[in-house]
Image (spheres, rainbow, N blue to C red):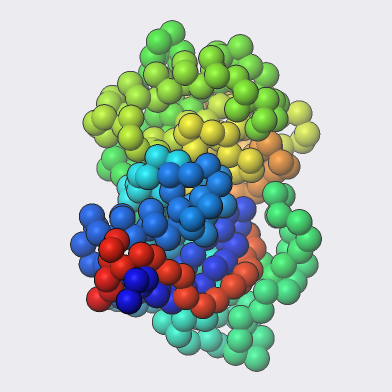
Length: 361
């Protein structure tokens, strides 16, 4: 035997895609697991030519699912971000777009039974401890991918997957504001460091001489901006108690600007060494929370009442986040956040990795 076969589903979740695999079909120890995921994706080549990755950070993601041993949850979702070219695997973050496909994949894999009409799947995000309820369309007791829901960054329409995120505050650092301050100044740049669904460093676009309306391609071509941003991100990571983040994709970075298309705020999100073509679901929750907390760098009018609908204008359109929150003396208390995404099963079968990487369980 020269190769090891691993059963998988290949799915688009939100504006990302990648393999969804039963955790039991993969190595138990994380070091071997990382080598398998590098081989599976084809990390180390810009095109991921020797794997099933897509040559971009939004297409080199892996979801690993298993039945949960937690009373509340039906399924555990363990996420891995595989680098496109560097052969690195980051198990620290989670991904809300890929999470959009977890409910449908869990049903397809037989981990969760389908109900007639709609099926609620309670998901524990292993990486961060967040709890998420996904409502999946299951007419006739089968997952339906056809529907009229539309999300920016994905052509056409599909069945909606409603996501409700809970326990997202401080999932990585333990704190809403990991530095204890609404604004930190790093390298002359005022930033807000916040941990809601995803630890982030958020700055005003104008602080970098940007408008905040640049395209992803324009930003990716601005190497001077990326160099300055990365220096700020690394220092912020240290101040947030995350240590040396030079080899980690977290904290992520975002910039904000006044809205220009009727939304709450214009944003651009970084992964962090490339501009996200749309918007991360987890990042959207953190940016929405930044808008709702008085005194942050967002500096835009705060909506009245809860839940608040925050519309983030991103590089490919917009994304709506419905946030249930309360304003307290210490800032915004985030209770939950809801979004609607879509997912689609693209392929199913077996993916192969060299036996020398892993001979199998």
